[in-house]
Image 1 (cartoon, helix red, strand yellow):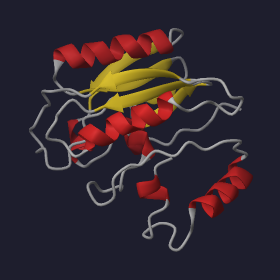
Image 2 (cartoon, rainbow, N blue to C red):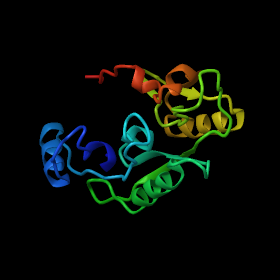
Image 3 (tube, one colour):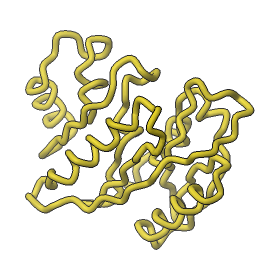
Image 4 (spheres, rainbow, N blue to C red):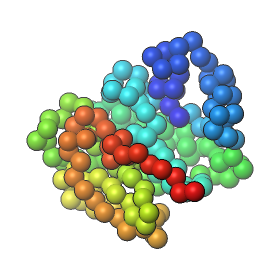
Amino acid sequence: MTESCILNDNRNPGRHKQEVESELKQLLGLEKIIWLKGIKGKDITDGHTDFYARFAKPGIVIVSRDMDKKSYDYEITRKSIEILQSSTDAKGNPLELVILDTPWDINTKYGTKDFAAVFVGYYVCNGAIIMQKFGDKKMDHAAKIKLEKVFSNHHIEQISIDGIASGGGSIHCATQQVPKV
């Protein structure tokens, strides 16, 4: 979770980390929470965790690394990687990180002000992963190859999400996942 989002007064006014952690553990049955920093006020989400990292499988975390040194997320993505490299899962095992570098070239027909060019927001469905592509053939392909290794039993399909990304979102922001029971 990101401190910038979850511990933000616009979402949980006056709540402290320990209080939020305790409640989330009880409500969601969590054993451990790893806190990333995030950044308040730079995007519409105040740094949702799903922009920086997400678990793909137990012990395996997909992590975004911003490649643009001018981006406000450049340093924070590296800090997230440091935090995750020194973290463990709930059983004390080290995490395996799969780092997806952000694209350099993006389709800009909808503008770039709030454009969320990260590969972490893919959608997992029955037998497939629907992931984004941004028009940077090299980086789009590299991200797909990495997800193919993690999700070897899934078909990986890349689609252009320019409209969603230009509003600061990703594929899973525009879907409603229902867990398999």
